[in-house]
Length: 476
Image (spheres, helix red, strand yellow):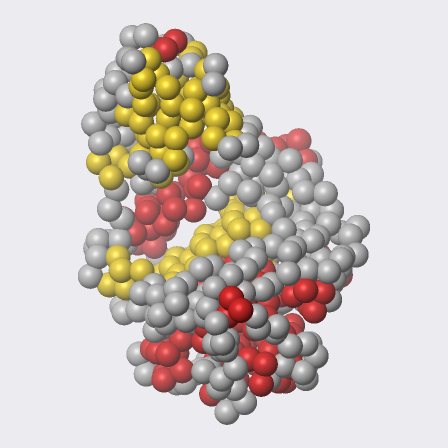
C-alpha cells in the first residue's frame, strides 16, 4: 500500500467538513496553491505551484490555515507527517512551533499581570524563589523587568537553543540558565544594561518561564494548558517536554533540508516558553482570532482588551512588543512571529484590523516556502501593500563564466561557485542555487533575500560582496 501512496507526496487532506466548503473558497484555495511567489520579480518570472516548491525544497509536509473576517476560512495539510510510516499531514497533525512558543508565553505572562500577580515593571528577582539572576557590572545597576524579557530588551545572552536528542539527559531550567551540564547552552547573562535596545534572547524568555513557575507554583506546561491554551480553544496543543506518549501518533517528524529525518524523529526542548510548543495552524489561528477580537474590544479568551493592547504595543524598540513583533504592511499593521527548531519551521501573521491572518508550518530545516505561501495568500485575498516584491531586470549570464568560478571564504565559512551548461551556481549545503545576473557583476538568488556583487581587483574577480557589508574573498 505504501508504494501506491508514494506518488501522492502532494496528498491533501481536508479538515472535518472541508468537502462542504463553498465553490468560492475552493477557488481561493486553488489560487493560493497555484500562485506562490518570492521576494523578487523579474521579466522572466512565473508563479510556482505548491507542489513544485515542495519538490524544490525537498519538503516532506506542511500545513496551512487562512483567516478571513475573523474566521478560519480554510485549513489544509499537504505531504507527509512521517514518510517512512506513510502517515500524511492532516489538519490535526502537530508541529513544533519553535519560537512561536514565545507568543503564547506572552499571553500567559499577561494573564498573571491581569490577575494582579505580576508587575511588568518590577525587578524579576522579586518573584524568583528557586534561583536569582546575578546582576553584574554589565547591568550598570539597572534591574531586569518582565516587560524587558518579553520584548527582548533585557540585554541578555543566548539567542536560541538546539534542543536535545531523545537519548540525551535533559537539564533543569536552572541548569539551562546557568549553562551547567547537561545543558548544551552557555549561561544566560547580561550583555549590556537592560532597556536600551532589542536583541533577541531565548535565554531571557527562559528566565520568564521560571518567573511564571515560581509565581504560580505549577509546572510551566500545566499553567499554560489551563490558563492559556484551553481558554483559547487550543485544546490539541501542549508545552509538555518530552511530549506525552499518547500524542505521538499526531506528531510530525522533523527533517533536514535534504529530507533526512532527525534521529528520534524530533528534538526535545526543556526551554518550554522559548521553544517547546507543539501545535498546528488551526490552533494557532484560534489564538490569532482571539487576539484580534480582544483588540477590537470583544470579550472572550484569557486576556482583556486592555491587556491585549498592551501585549501588542512595542516596548523600547519600534517592532518588538511583548511576545510578538509588529510589522507595518501597506496600510495595516500585523503581529507576527516565526519559529525555527531542528527539523521544523513556522510563521504566522495576524492583522491588527480587519481580521486577516495566515499560519504556515513545515517539518523541515528549510522554511523558504513559507513566505512564498504567505505572499500567495496576501495576493489572492487582496491584502493591499502586504506583498511588495523587489523588481529587477535579469540579463543573460556573462560570456566568460570561468572568471567567477572558484571557492570564496570569510572567517570559517566557504562557498563554491561552479559553472554548468552555461550557467553559474553556488553550492549551498545539499543543493546548487543558480545565480541570476542583473549586471556583469551583480546577481541575485531566488532563495536568499540579499544583494550580491562580485568585487574586482585589477580587473580580476576578487570576492563576493553581500548587502554591501560582508565580502567573501576568492581563494582559488
